[in-house]
Image (cartoon, rainbow, N blue to C red; front, side, top):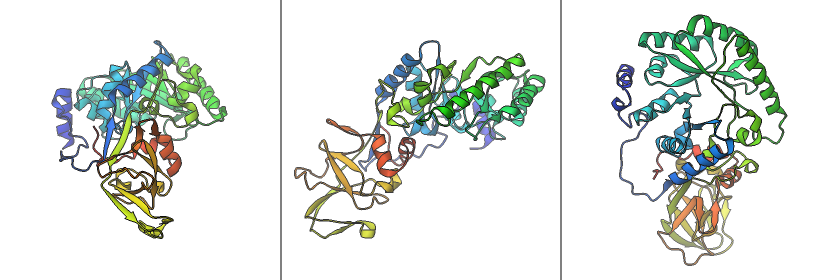
Length: 398
């Protein structure tokens, strides 16, 4: 769809933005039994737990970037708002437009900043971009003047992440530009930074970042600028550094019932996502049979192997090969051989009652057992964030 068409639709408001025009695949029949089930009640309860923890005086910005960490951005956004989130955070302008197209009217902060050329769309959709460069300010101001409107921005200071944000010694020039060139159409709503090591055991790097942010706020005040919303804390930060919650926190992975490290799981949250499939076939193989690509596994006994239609193209990492377990009939069963693009093989020899069609839990709970995101992360050598975000679009969400 042409940019001019997007702008025309955006200018007419959310009702004119047809749901699904951004990164939405064509509707297809669902035949394969591999699915991702999202529990909206868990999402709502998790957000309520976060709000209770931080208190009524601290706003909560629900982070729904990367398609809601693989949970579905629109559904996650609606659950967060129902549970009392002040607004939502995305990474891309396109992600913000997707929410607007679905009728979401709450504040949306674009953490990844405005790419050149996106500014008219940012203004038309009422998005609130994070900025850290003089050119960001100038382009947004130009777009706002052209539209006859205003744009709220959140200024980001790089206090030690070394990724996005202005360096502390660049801040005065940026504030000067805002005050002299852009204040007529831009509103300095927020000041923020991002913690690089909030879920690491050593607190010293975070303390240094918080000290740098405090110094940066003094630079704002010295110019008579007082952003209404100061925000620093991600999920680990809001748990471990309560004095840094300021006016708003930005929970991401905690919304989805997990954490970057098991030591920093918030009380009262639970996983919202279950990834499941079903046994597609069963075969009995003799001792000495070699399994899957590369023959990395040699069976030591006569074994019953269940074929499960899920593989690394679905986001079930190949590094799980020979390490992971799944749940069948409430029991942990090992993955044997290499995980392939579309299929995994499970040793169910010790479950003689297994039948074709039985449910297989790859992530989630079955009876009293659970495969957690931290389990998959540990087995595959990736992070819990990658576990959630890596689930493929070809796995239907329900």
